[in-house]
Amino acid sequence: MMPSSKSDAPEGATGKFGKGWAVAKPWPVTLRDDTAAGAVVLRPLRRRDAGDWSRLRAENAAWLERWEATAPGANRYIASTFGEYVRSLSAQARAGTSLPFGVELDGALVGQLTVSSITWGSMCSASIGYWVSQSVAGRGVIPTGVAMATDYAFFLGLHRIEINIRPENKPSLRVVEKLGLRDEGVRERFLHIQGQWRDHRTFAITREEVPEGLLTRWQRLRDAP
Image 1 (cartoon, rainbow, N blue to C red):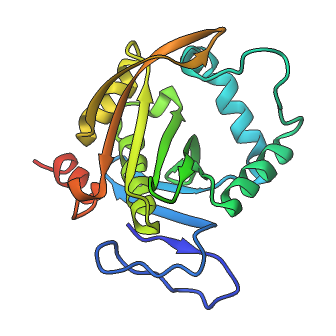
Image 2: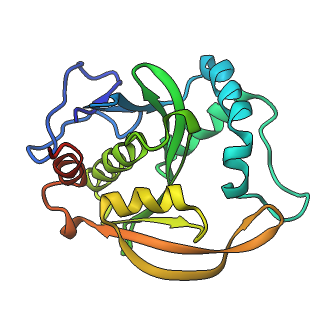
Image 3: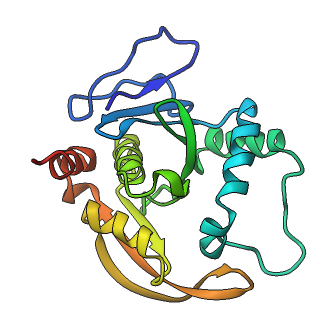
């Protein structure tokens, strides 16, 4: 995996994980891994993604909506346009509170992955959430994306990454099973989804558990004959 970061600094300041990445700024950044399913890329969403993003959401509404967080009550902020949504994500990334990625497979937008709730200080932790088109589910796209995002978060100095999943969400449970994240148990009424507070299982990993990088470990399992 090679990260790249656009800034005013000279281009090409990148290196392999484990040998010391050099990025001019933490954001924007693009991460890529070439897999048997195709090139998996994490990169910032752009305003010109509006059509593809809206089409994906519409085509996958039934596949996604039962797992997606909602906000209780009527007093919640909703971006009025896709451009406003992208600007909001970019502001969060620049502020260091999240890393919001679009997910591509062979150049086509297929989903979204966000490293959110980034906390520094004595905790140095974050959460990862994601969604992906049903048409590419099961092809290793999201496990690869999670592994890349986790390694990049650790590179930036975070210590712990967690993923919270509803116990009924078998496709997502398969992602953390493939990656070998620890099951830390059930958080009761943890997140508001479809009008109710829902239980979630928490899975986590720390830097010490994958000194070689989570992507390297996943590649070894994924690519084994």
